[in-house]
Length: 295
Ligand SMILES: Nc1ncnc2c1ncn2[C@@H]1O[C@H](COP(=O)(O)OP(=O)(O)O)[C@@H](O)[C@H]1O
Ligand SMILES: [Mg+2]
Picture (cartoon, rainbow, N blue to C red):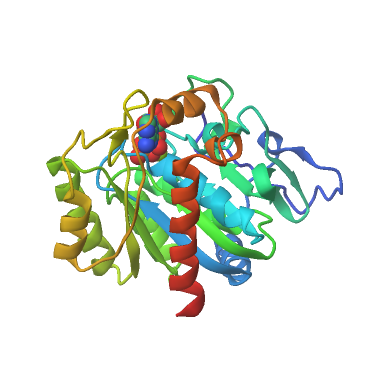
């Protein structure tokens, strides 16, 4: 894979026809930055979803939160900046689609509830193609994902982050100075709560508001007995949130149906709208709406 996979349209090649993004040329960074500010001005609330470690369900939470908020009638976009493990397209059921470009920039893929989706996954030639990029290249890619995409007018833009507080998190903090806030995802194990404390401290370091914490895989309801089991420990998310002085937005159960839907590329919130999990996402979405739209 080359250093710049976006190869944006050059001014010499004006056309109204959407075209394959992989066949056009890059633009100068300065031009992209100006566009980035203009594009981001048209997005009311920009929320990054992060976690201290991988595999805690960040992408699952980002995708389902995006669907829950979009289901309320708001205009939503989601940008997947996990270049090494892009999973948003699969979780929204839009894997295998392609980004196109026209004179206005990159056209996002449209997902459930008209969610606009951008991910490196749409640009990879094969399922198992690795993305081998250093931080500087990822910064350029994030800049283009934000600044070169026809996001249009949006109420919410969710940013699905890779695990940890590395280059990508810094790039987001730097490129979106007026970020509305961050939502932190954790699971109730000691390692994860330690990791989440690091994320909270990172958010404080870059002066980002912490909207709250979502505890994923918080409990398991046995389908046979209806009994609830706290597999990773009970009450840890709440304890950690209290200790850190941040709100606990919700607790999403560990459920094999979730894992299966994600593995099969089915959007969980669409497929199981009446499930306790989807209802929990609606409750979390409402808390976020109350937090950002009222304040
Ligand atoms: N609440 C849950 N119950 C069951 N499986 C889950 C749950 N949340 C996430 N998963 C599964 O765990 C894996 C990691 O989730 P993912 O959202 O990709 O994590 P991250 O983005 O933090 O790396 C995926 O296979 C996903 O389907
Ligand atoms: Mg992820």
